[in-house]
Image (cartoon, rainbow, N blue to C red; front, side):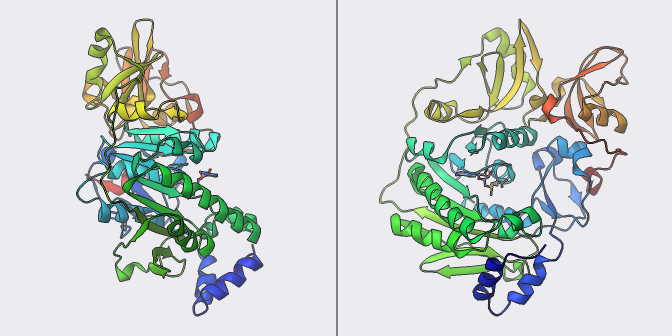
Amino acid sequence: MSLPVGFLQRIQNQFPSNSIEFLEAIHAASTLSVRLNLAKTGNRRTDLTPVPWCPTGYYLDDRPYFTNDPWFQAGAYYVQEPSSMFLWHILSTLFGGRKPETVLDLCAAPGGKSTLLASFFPPETFLVANEVVQSRAGILAENVNKWGADNVVVTNSDPRVFSRLPNFFDLILVDAPCSGEGLFRKETASMAQWSLDNANLCSQRQRRILMDAWDTLKPGGILIYSTCTFNPAENEENMVWLSSQHNVESLEISVEPGWGIDVVHYKGIVGYRFLYHRVRGEGFFVSVVQKKSESDWQTKLGKTTVGMPLPKSLGGRVKDMVTAGNQYLLKDSIINVTYDLRYLSSVLGNINIVRPGCKMATVIRDEVKPSHFLALSSNLNSDFFQKSELENFQVNQFLRRENFVLNQPSKGLYLATWKGLPVGFVNYLGNRSNTSLPQEYRILKPVPFHGESLADSLKN
Ligand code: SAM
């Protein structure tokens, strides 16, 4: 596919001394990497090459068929391109000591950066992952469920709605929709969609999103702005525009020269640009600013008004199923969360909530039925359940939601594991099994599975 003429012209002006290297690198293969979920993989060793700016990120040389891998389906890792993982380095630089209480990922689907935020911050952080497009909010919720973070609230609202929560978040990530130049070699469709007009529209839309984010950022709070484009109008110029509107301080993040990241200084703003030919990653831009303020801001939290407290009889039956969190009843669902519920009460009524936390069980008549999401939660108390380790063909049938027989002498509910990792629940009925896997999570494409998994690259 040939590059859009307007894009070529801009790149030649923008990088006059190395546009040839840049344009050659666009035709090279894209980078492939995964980020491990240490809550599930533990501190296993691996010979994979690390992504230098993220301790849980690793490059892969070949693309396996991830969909079939039970460890992928159970949230042991996330397939994320390396440059985006630079967010980890930013967080380590800014939040080594005091951690934010409230975090908003405003443009969050499909959830690469939300799961990174969830892994970086402690479980008591109130982390809202928002996505304005409804269908994409569903994918986001699925990925968060698989990651098993019981402190992530998934919402589906327009960024404008968050201005109803002034001065609420300590940290906001705006990973803005953009012209996608940094994805040209990964997704050729983004090349076909590129146009000068669209890039200008993106810039305008990004400014609107930044304005909405600014209102809900606490004084003294941090805003991280990123795109996957090289277009100055969507990057550094937007940051300069933001500082013309508000009291903004641009923050510097130290980078190792060997990483190949371009540090962009532009009209008082610092940004970090990842160019195809200089970095082992895809195209990316990020800039960090702080909302300047004279005084410290304290959020006042009211009483919790969320759902219903669990009746004692139910509470006693579920509390040992998890290692951490508080449970409440929402209609017939028991929700486990590790954040302070008063935060959720503060946002209720303003924002459309898709996932308040881990839906750990449903109550049917007086029976408590553990849900698939509990099996995938990082707070699952696996010792509470009898377990059944699945064979390769069984786990594949489980993930396809096909019927299979467990190698167990007795009927009952089992926590199904594969290579030791929980993949879901199975209610074994003797001659068949009911699986906990939601219909919409099942694998559809019939690709044979012989046990290939990233788990093989991780050693105890
Ligand atoms: N942060 C995500 C991740 O790491 O997986 C990627 C986010 S993607 C770059 C930008 C997201 O913004 C998309 O999911 C898109 O649907 C959403 N979006 C589109 N229009 C938007 C708007 N007007 N306001 C906010 N978000 C929007």
